[in-house]
Every structure is written in structure tokens, then in C-alpha cells.
Length: 302
Image (cartoon, rainbow, N blue to C red):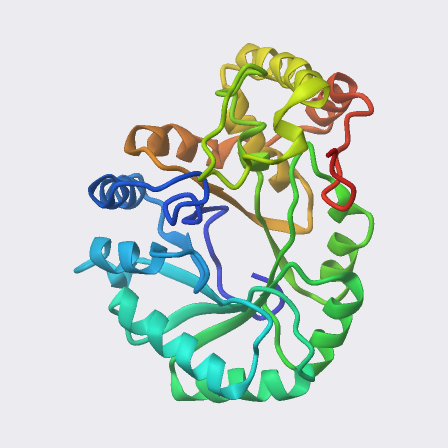
């Protein structure tokens, strides 16, 4: 994980879906999903203060198994004041039933001078409450700035086959500053999950409900390409979901691919992506199938 960081698995289980990103998840099913995750050998877990009740779900799921896990969480929002970081960190510890966080991350940049924020984080590291420090959703300029303030081991940009903007400046910025990349949203919010068709009607509780990528001509275009990618993956003895998880790992800047899930039965299948190493020829063939379909979160369709 970056320079002087720990060795971590190439796959990380992200808990935003369990926290209700796509609709409320029954607690018993959420806990069963977490158990399936750990039973499948997925020991790297990512969550956040802002993921609704995800930290509580983790806490109820990991009793007696904490020593086998590498847990990452984040202080969310734009308030990085000393008081808020202290409150958020201690609440995360209580909710997850642990006395330390392996990787504590800033969910986004804030207006507070990063040197002051880093001073707080280093204090908690020295106290043993956190082990490593990371960032998420920072710009290239912010990555360079935070790197000067203290040791940053990891960074989380959005990065998938469909959303490749991170290749322009974020991935080089992380590499130039010795920061390992945890790619998030590798399934592109389900666009690369192979489950949704253009006729889908999403629930109003689903964060994708108003997304222009899940409706109209744009969704039809995306679906046409992903169906071809699904066929390509099947010809390799795999499937679209495993391809989406494995693809970011082919970039030398990326050390971990974060994927989520809401059903226990999905977890074992997804976890099998860990040993799929795409070759340069594979990547060329994928690019040919995808063509010019490169999506942007900065200018999404209405």
C-alpha cells in the first residue's frame, strides 16, 4: 500500500451498498453478506462514517474475527475540525467494536489547512487508534498538497472500465507521490454488473434513481457495449462482474479493487476475480469492444 505501507489483498469489500446506497438492506441479510465476505477470505473491508449503518453492521458481524481483518473507514463530510475528527473516529471505533482502525481516510478534501488535519491524524496514529492514513476523492492538486503534509499510504479515486477519467491526472499524481490506489466504484454503480437492462425501474431510495446513465438512449448504448464485454469475458471462462473487478488491477498504479454487494450468494463469485491477470492483448481487445464509450461524472447526461 504505497511507500512504506502494509501488504494488503488485491480485493476489498466495500460496504456502501450494505449501508443503503441502492435501498434499505435487511440487517440479517447484511450480516449474512458480511459473514459470506469473511468466509470467502475477503479480509480487507472498506466503510465510512457516512455509510449510514454500515459500521454498525460490520461491528455485529466481526465479533471474534477482528484480528484477521484489515478495516478501513473514513471521516466524511467537509468538516475536518479537530472536534469532528475526534467524534467521528471514536464513534467508528465504538460502532465496529474495535480499539483501532487499520486505515483511516479523509472521504474528501475540506477547507481546513491540510497540515492541521494531518497533525490530528498523526496524533491518533501515535496513540494507536489508527495505523495508516489515506484519502479519497481528492484532485491531483490536492493529492500533491496532502503528500507534503505527512505520510499518505492510500488514495481512492473512482476508476472503472466505463469511468476512466482518473487516468488523466489522478493515477499519475498518486504514483508520483508514492501513494497506492484503491479503485472504487469498479462496477460503475451496477452498469458493469450485467444485471440491469434498459427497461429497469429503479426504486426512489436508490441513489441511481435520477442518474442519466440508467435511462434513455445513454443506458441503451451502455448496455449494448456491456453485453459485448460480457460475451468476451464468458469466452475467457469468466463473466462481466469478474472482468469489471479485475480490470482496474491491470493498471500499475492500482493495488486494490473495491467491490460491494448486498447478497451473500454474490460474494463468493465476485471474490474469484482476485487471480485474473489481464494481459496487454486482453486490454487491447477490451478497448476495441468499448470503442469511444468513456463516461464522465463531471458532465453526466441529464
